[in-house]
Image 1: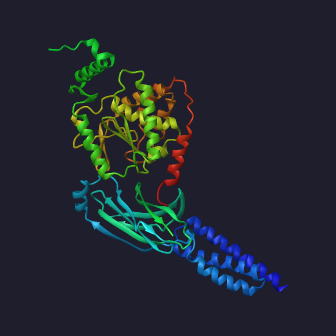
Image 2: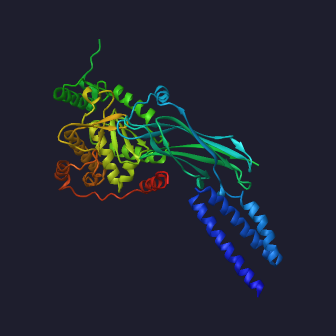
Image 3: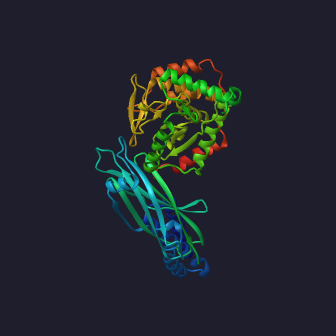
Length: 215
Length: 259
């Protein structure tokens, strides 16, 4: 009897964890949720595997512990963006000199100058640094405008993760936004694409950068 | 000494010269240079350089750009095939902006925003937007330096046609809006759409659906009346959207803005 109850509880935990993992994968922009989902998903799967393999509840506990540890770092659904930072790298005058910009007369414009991912080649478990260098061009009467920065990770044309979008006020000039992405330990070897996006009002720009995961 | 006989010029060149002469007599403009008005190409080049520096543009290899370029080429060929011209090197570029807008800068360069492509419900409507911009070029609206004050020349299908000529800011450039010229461009657009097998009523549909409530996006009743007179008796062409058009609409829906 107790064994039947245990099995029901375990299935409920597994379903709940699957639900959370699904949510996090779909939304993909909440690092805590992503990490939690990885941990929960790993624990539930480990518990289920342990229970089936050993036939008793202690197997579940052992499996859950192993699964939780693995789930926190495995899978793009749980990918996190860390060490985000942004700074103004050029004044409006610098941008004007460099790019010959003039003041827009109506609405804010953004233009990505360069999106990068470094290093070029990484191993699973290592970290990639993504950076977006962009210009913000504000109308005469505006001091600053809300700007959104975002990164999308793709492989073979499929979206693996939408990394947390950053929304901040920006003044005119050149800005650099960068962050680190830890590469999951089970990441498949191959070429990955980072789509850099910046948006202010209706004006937006994108740029692609690449990195290779090799074992 | 060599003499060039009229017969060696060909009909196209003769027609070009006649049009140039007509333009000169009507507008007092200098003679055409490679199919463009004198000074049009350097002025357009200056505007292009400024746009490329300041505006986020889709690359020429981008799928949406390729579709819009091929649509523009197709309607130009079908229209110009029945005309004496066909010498304008049309270049269509996509601006990454979600607000609907389209404009020409002369020398065959037309800009369309992502928002304008999204705004077009059918391929015929997108063809109408391009045809209108081509109409400004074909009507010789880029002749005369008064439209090029500091490379500030724009013609915009979505802009408010007021009674008087007006200027509206687009980026750091000003857009010239002249209701008379807008109606002239509409006339060309209807002819282009008919020649290309697209429904000419799409031009009217676009004009009726222009976003209301913004200073630069007002619906002009006179423009609509003029279009109604132009297309009222024409049979609908019944053009169906191509799979490529549907594909680029999906791409824009998917890409869109940051969520």
